[in-house]
Image 1 (tube, helix red, strand yellow):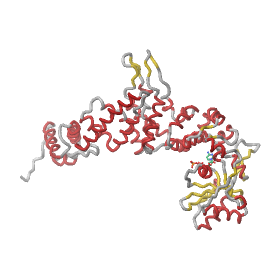
Image 2 (tube, protein in one colour):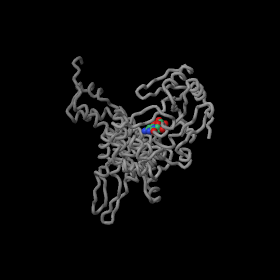
Image 3 (cartoon, protein in one colour):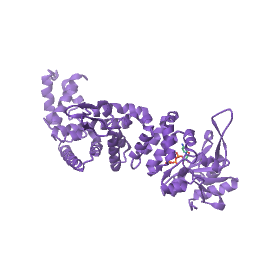
Image 4 (cartoon, protein in one colour):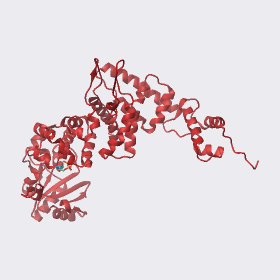
Length: 470
Ligand code: CTP
């Protein structure tokens, strides 16, 4: 087959390559995505000869600046919203005195052999005589059509060369909804232990791509089945399995988590909300208990799970600021909306609004996604109850405006009124007012709050300073 490659950039690279007396090809992800009709702005050009020199000459013609990475022999520039990267074709060879591969200049075919999957080893020629022809030595086009992820060489070689490719296989299978070839998957299972030589940053970058996919559970099931999940996130694989005692079983928490994750992914692209879904039940294994009367319980798994979030984030090298706090908060609060079902009191609703603040909508989405059951009638009933809680949230918020609660009497006001320095008593009065508002004893307004301040100050034996000038 032949691709039209109408973009001006490809024509110019083609002309310059001819002038430089080298052969150039578009390769890798751009070719794959072009054939899949997926938009792509990253273009990799492989050159039989010097990639750096060709990049310089093309950039000069386009009057753009080039960034060179001499250590890697690559050079890149941006052109009309596209990132164009040039590299010389490489070949691996083993010297007798070292098991480490030495990289030397090679042909296009040498370069294609070094790539991870057949669908990523496709190239388009930029030579005048066969401009746009597909060069496909490993049957990548067939694999694209059959939706298969397969290594171009013996998978043992491809995966030992770079064990990250085991997760990349799963990432592409998830993103594209492809199947990993039997032999490649068997090899991943066999080499799962090799993952330890890969940096956490590279692993996590792939995890994030799995998380951002349309149906992230596909990736986590594959990670689990291959044995990689135990290495990356044992807290999650610990959710596998359902025990039965005295005829009583419990939900299989791994597949439940997968269902919740996909439910959230259907509704939201917010990556961190998806992480909250993934981690919402990680406190379950540690809190699991069998009670003869009530059966299995996981009391406090919300709290225990939220305490585990920082260490999971630290281990995965995920950001430890706002994003981590958001996930921790959602894990901690994930049972609260549904707990209100039995008794939708205004004070319960106000407390939930106060604790959740701006995350309330995301929390409700997570909580709604958490309603899973094999019995459609049960799901319908829970969703009906949940709808009532949602309605009360809207009504109470309209009436009391708790969501972005600002105390109607500030600490400064209390200090000024009673001539106090910052001290415990100021906190006590402030808390008393806040609790009274959340309990509905007084309204969320300054007048009632000031009256309550005076009452509480009297109880604490605090009086206003005497004004000497009067
Ligand atoms: N590649 C590889 N082994 C790796 C990483 C990359 O063989 N561990 C090759 C593949 O041929 C891949 C190309 O380098 O197509 C570019 O890699 P990258 O930009 O990471 O992936 P893309 O295929 O472009 O996909 P995406 O943009 O979705 O990351």
